[in-house]
Length: 105
Picture 1 (cartoon, helix red, strand yellow):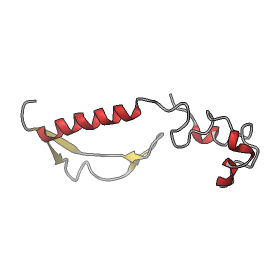
Picture 2 (cartoon, helix red, strand yellow):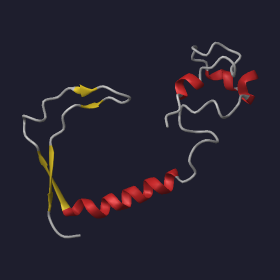
Picture 3 (cartoon, one colour):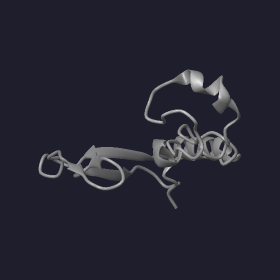
Picture 4 (tube, helix red, strand yellow):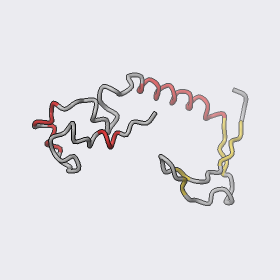
Protein backbone atom coordinates (compact mmCIF):
# COMPACT_ATOMS: atom_id res chain seq x y z
CA UNK A 1 0.00 0.00 0.00
CA UNK A 2 1.38 3.39 -0.96
CA UNK A 3 0.47 6.58 0.88
CA UNK A 4 0.65 9.67 -1.39
CA UNK A 5 2.61 11.75 1.12
CA UNK A 6 3.32 14.62 -1.28
CA UNK A 7 -0.41 15.09 -1.91
CA UNK A 8 -1.38 14.64 1.72
CA UNK A 9 1.24 17.16 2.85
CA UNK A 10 -0.16 19.78 0.46
CA UNK A 11 -3.85 19.35 1.24
CA UNK A 12 -5.28 22.87 1.85
CA UNK A 13 -7.83 21.44 4.31
CA UNK A 14 -5.02 21.00 6.84
CA UNK A 15 -2.84 24.06 6.20
CA UNK A 16 -3.88 27.73 6.36
CA UNK A 17 -1.07 28.97 4.12
CA UNK A 18 -0.39 28.26 0.44
CA UNK A 19 0.95 24.73 0.50
CA UNK A 20 3.11 25.19 -2.62
CA UNK A 21 5.32 27.80 -0.91
CA UNK A 22 8.50 26.83 0.90
CA UNK A 23 8.00 28.55 4.24
CA UNK A 24 9.54 26.75 7.26
CA UNK A 25 8.07 29.40 9.57
CA UNK A 26 4.65 27.86 9.06
CA UNK A 27 5.47 25.44 11.88
CA UNK A 28 5.90 28.32 14.31
CA UNK A 29 2.62 30.10 13.66
CA UNK A 30 -0.97 28.99 13.36
CA UNK A 31 0.01 25.74 11.63
CA UNK A 32 2.27 24.58 14.47
CA UNK A 33 -0.69 22.64 15.88
CA UNK A 34 -1.46 20.95 12.56
CA UNK A 35 -2.72 17.40 12.33
CA UNK A 36 0.43 15.27 12.76
CA UNK A 37 -0.99 12.50 10.58
CA UNK A 38 -0.84 14.64 7.43
CA UNK A 39 2.86 15.58 7.43
CA UNK A 40 4.70 12.38 6.55
CA UNK A 41 7.23 13.66 4.01
CA UNK A 42 10.20 12.35 5.94
CA UNK A 43 8.59 9.21 7.30
CA UNK A 44 7.90 10.85 10.62
CA UNK A 45 4.81 11.32 12.65
CA UNK A 46 2.61 8.84 14.44
CA UNK A 47 2.44 6.51 11.43
CA UNK A 48 6.14 5.69 11.39
CA UNK A 49 6.91 2.06 12.13
CA UNK A 50 8.37 1.66 15.61
CA UNK A 51 10.30 -1.44 14.53
CA UNK A 52 11.95 0.27 11.58
CA UNK A 53 15.37 0.62 13.25
CA UNK A 54 15.34 -2.97 14.48
CA UNK A 55 14.43 -4.25 11.00
CA UNK A 56 17.27 -2.24 9.40
CA UNK A 57 19.73 -3.57 11.96
CA UNK A 58 18.59 -7.15 11.35
CA UNK A 59 19.00 -6.68 7.59
CA UNK A 60 22.54 -5.36 8.06
CA UNK A 61 23.46 -8.30 10.29
CA UNK A 62 22.07 -10.81 7.79
CA UNK A 63 23.88 -9.17 4.86
CA UNK A 64 27.14 -8.92 6.81
CA UNK A 65 26.87 -12.64 7.55
CA UNK A 66 26.06 -13.70 3.98
CA UNK A 67 28.20 -11.41 1.81
CA UNK A 68 31.57 -13.07 2.64
CA UNK A 69 30.20 -16.29 1.11
CA UNK A 70 29.45 -14.76 -2.32
CA UNK A 71 31.38 -13.19 -5.18
CA UNK A 72 29.60 -10.73 -7.44
CA UNK A 73 30.69 -10.89 -11.09
CA UNK A 74 29.97 -8.37 -13.86
CA UNK A 75 27.32 -9.75 -16.20
CA UNK A 76 28.92 -8.46 -19.37
CA UNK A 77 28.49 -5.46 -21.63
CA UNK A 78 25.50 -6.92 -23.47
CA UNK A 79 23.24 -6.75 -20.39
CA UNK A 80 24.63 -3.59 -18.78
CA UNK A 81 23.58 -1.27 -21.59
CA UNK A 82 22.07 1.48 -19.48
CA UNK A 83 18.64 3.03 -19.55
CA UNK A 84 16.01 3.33 -16.86
CA UNK A 85 12.79 1.49 -16.18
CA UNK A 86 9.60 3.46 -15.67
CA UNK A 87 7.24 2.97 -12.79
CA UNK A 88 6.90 4.25 -9.25
CA UNK A 89 10.68 4.40 -8.93
CA UNK A 90 13.52 5.18 -11.32
CA UNK A 91 15.63 2.04 -11.50
CA UNK A 92 18.29 0.84 -13.93
CA UNK A 93 16.68 -1.04 -16.81
CA UNK A 94 19.30 -3.73 -17.22
CA UNK A 95 21.53 -4.94 -14.44
CA UNK A 96 23.67 -7.91 -15.23
CA UNK A 97 25.23 -9.31 -12.11
CA UNK A 98 26.17 -12.92 -11.60
CA UNK A 99 26.50 -14.36 -8.13
CA UNK A 100 29.03 -17.08 -7.42
CA UNK A 101 28.56 -19.08 -4.22
CA UNK A 102 31.99 -19.47 -2.67
CA UNK A 103 31.20 -21.90 0.13
CA UNK A 104 28.46 -23.66 1.99
CA UNK A 105 26.70 -21.59 4.61
